[in-house]
Length: 246
Image 1 (cartoon, rainbow, N blue to C red):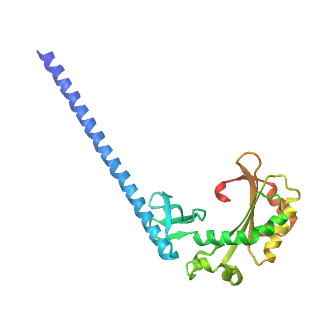
Image 2: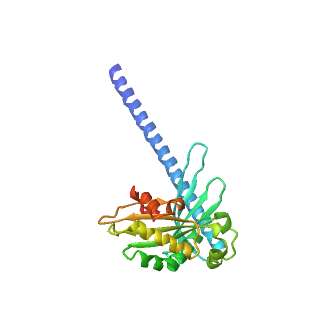
């Protein structure tokens, strides 16, 4: 009789343990679901805030892609980062970010638009110097404090290009298949051509891509572009170039 009661008591304890375990798992699942939903809700809120900010600043509609919270740590809220583009022009994709602590929103739309304008303006001249190039692009960097106070910044590039070179920085991007002869000489002539057209602070990103998708090259600062020898020295020690850097 005592043995039967012991077995019965043991089964009851096991049942209670299973009930406790199932209850605990259910609570954990609910907590995870709430956290997940709150994260999704926060992302949607951030996207909405960025979309309104871009609309107010540039007077046109934008599509903001997925945003992710990066840089979160102990006592650090991190930064929401993603990409956006005008509703009618996906080719003008640019970076956006929002500080989770200060709420400040920044974007590279002006830089992206002005880079397209400068590329259309200057790439043909560079291509005459390097006809074998697979890609030629001129990126325009804009002082963030300066771009934030411009009126109609997307319509003012020609004026800023002429009068405010101290607020701009450029990067000549050249991709070849690796078979270009005297490439350092051609890159030096390209930099000189851009200087003659009015551009002052110019960096260089040179890479070679043959066969596969990987590119090997080097970024060179303005100080390393003063001679053919300097350029040749800079680009001789090549590393893998990420597509995001192009």
